[in-house]
Structures are given as C-alpha cells and as structure tokens.
Length: 194
Image (cartoon, rainbow, N blue to C red; front, side, top):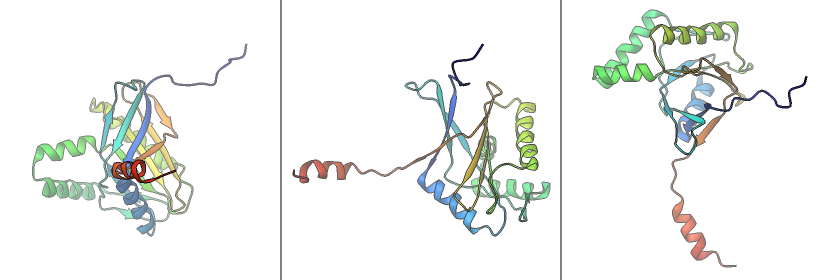
C-alpha cells in the first residue's frame, strides 16, 4: 500500500519569532566574530487562541554572551567561564529571582560557523542533546532551541518540544517589526489621488 500523504505534524507547529533589532544583533555578532562565537537568547513560548495548533517561541532581542574559547572549528566555555557569566548576570540584575528567571528561560543556544555550512557538527549534536537531558533531569518543561548561523546569511534551526519529546529541524524564524506606520496608511488614503 502507498500512503497518499507526506508525513506531517498536525499540531504544535513551532515558529521562532525575533524582532528586527534582535536579528540585526545576531548578524552583527556573526560578522564581528573572527572565528566561531556562541551566545544565548531567552525564550518565551506563546500560544494564541486563534492559532491553537501553533506555538510561537519569542527570542529575546538581547544576546547573552559568556566568555569563551574560540577557534575556526569550535567554541567552548569552561565551567569557570560559566560561573563568571552567572556572576555578570547577578551584577546586572541584582535580584536573584530575576537572575533565576533569566537562566531558566535562556534555552536558545546559538553559535556561528564562520563561513562554513551552518549544519550541526557531531559536537553540536552532543551539546544540544546535553541541554535536553539536563532539562529532562531537572523536570523542566522549557523548549530547547539550537540555532547556527554563518557569514553567508544562512542558518540552521533545531527545536525540542518538552511536551511531546519531538525534535523539529528547519523551523522558520519570523522577524517582527515594531514599527508603527499607521500614519502612512492614513496619509495614503487621504493624499494619494487616482
């Protein structure tokens, strides 16, 4: 027998959302980094009533950048560097509950692949799986995201859904603009004469 359909998921389709400033920050760090670089975004999942089968994963505009060893082929932050990163967050937010909230939602791990393909390496796979395993061990229901960018304006995405255990690949990123152009719409209606 032959299936008449391609394999599809009919619910909980994830979409990554970032605002224009956040996207420009990503492009900036990728172009600035002489080799690979890594950073994190906080992630806020939102499900709207009018689109119950989709979940929108909003990425923070801010990039959270730990100290790191970089090379052409990999990037690494030691335990000591991550402790320094934690201390930076404490100094910046000064409220332990805010620091904890930021860390709990900092589940989007990003890095660059310089000019190479943004497809994940074996090490990238291991790192992403370790984030998933850690979340499962901590009984966290936080979505986990891996994004890889390169200097050719290409990216790779992988998203883990904690409710279903599914891992999605090739998840789109939608860029939101917070610009209010309603005054142009009003002017066009009043001033563009046919």
